Length: 104
Image (cartoon, rainbow, N blue to C red):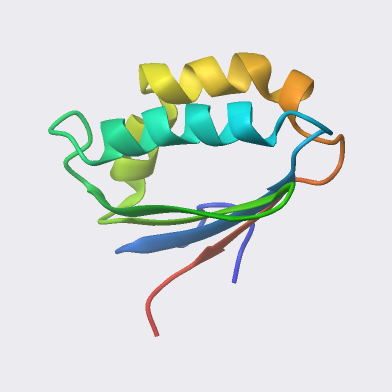
């Protein structure tokens, strides 16, 4: 497990967890669904999986990419950029945890 892309040479799997601010979970999930649509399209051919999980205000995203380049494409996608501009309004400060894994 890692918190950065150093040393990854193949598929990269990400688990990202965050807590939405009160009353903001639906808006956060809506933005994540726009990101999922991008991941599922030809815009992000190296995205293998983008799954959104939710329990009340706790949001978890499970992602898989063919390679590091796929992650960079994802991070530079318009829907991801939109979420990043709004994240501070939607997510409890300090609640976001991102872990990276490679296949076993």
